[in-house]
Amino acid sequence: MLTDLWGRATATQPPLTGEVSLLLGALALVIAWTPWGFRVVRHLVTLTHEAGHALVALLAGRRLTAIQLHSDSSGVTVSHGRPRGLGMVATVFAGYPVPALVGVAGAWLLGAGHAAGMLWALVATCALMLLLIRNWYGLWVVLVTGVGVGLLSWFASGPVLTGVAYLLVWLLLLAAPRSLVNLHRARRRRGTGTSDPDQLGRLTWLPPWFWIGTYWLLCAAAIGVGAWLLVPLPGLPALPG
Image 1: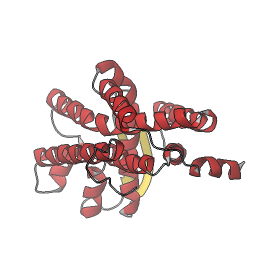
Image 2 (image 1 turned 135 degrees about the vertical axis):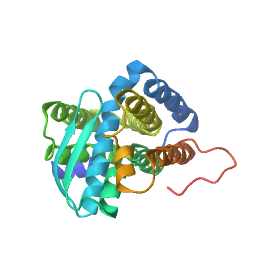
Image 3 (image 1 turned 180 degrees about the vertical axis):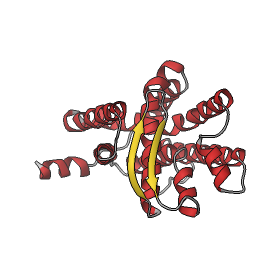
Image 4 (image 1 turned 30 degrees about the vertical axis):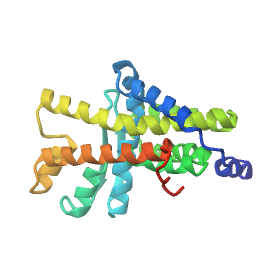
């Protein structure tokens, strides 16, 4: 069983043509930037967002105790350690850029033919998050995502698996800035105080708008690099894959 699973996760599939990838990117754009579509994909973005907080907290030497995912697409990652300092700043900062950065990493894997590996990495992330989820809705989101992607990776044919992997990568790249639009609306509606950029403003001498601008720049750069990997233009050198 484990040998078979490892073989599936490490199997290679040929990348899609640029035309097909571009069509999937257009579909992802419609999904990520329409109200009905974002209501579905926002859970994937939030899951990745909180996983980013959790990973950086661990790398910074902090102790993770809980992750919660809520139905309004918000989430909370609780870690313990020094209340200030570089580790705390990095932990708070990590959430919003991570979906786009994961999209870039996924685009690189797809270009190298590792669509299955990318999907199984998502399943492994969900499995690890189950150890820290502390609310029922978050448990449901992680279980549905992990089991759904796992079943797809196990039973789907190579072309279907590759197409789904490309769509997920495009969704991560294009939904990341969409979540920043929601951030702006939430701060305007509820006032400032609890959002990541507001916390960063209190932890540093830099105002919240600086951090929001940094998020936008990182998301834009990630979309550019991801598109270069997913739809290489004729005459331009491809990034190493």
